[in-house]
Length: 156
Image 1 (cartoon, one colour):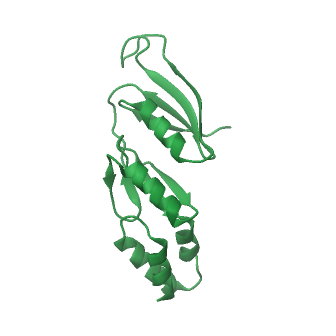
Image 2 (image 1 turned 90 degrees about the horizontal axis):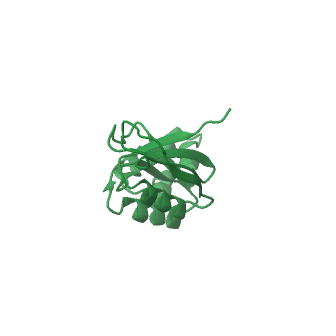
């Protein structure tokens, strides 16, 4: 059994996939094509399909005009090794998009992302509940997550 996330783009699927694949190490385009038959979304050749990987996750994508817009019910969470990686992804993915609280953003295609430092998970799993509370409260005040700020909150 294989599990693959599927994304429906209204337009610009190829540009989105090029951006995502360039940003996430270990990513690649597996294949792309167009549907050779007329569909409810348009004439033969107008509907684009692709399969790709982001890191170790499989995705499929379709560009077939408007249907349902992306929303927060589906997001891609990227766990980053350090602040430089958080900063790099945040800058690229938020360009032309919308930044949000707690490490969330929407890219210019409307897809929601959570850009999270690995250190946040480590701090949130600490057995000291007072420390976890401080880290949580600090994270809730942040837009782009900041490891130094999370560490300071952990120390009290």
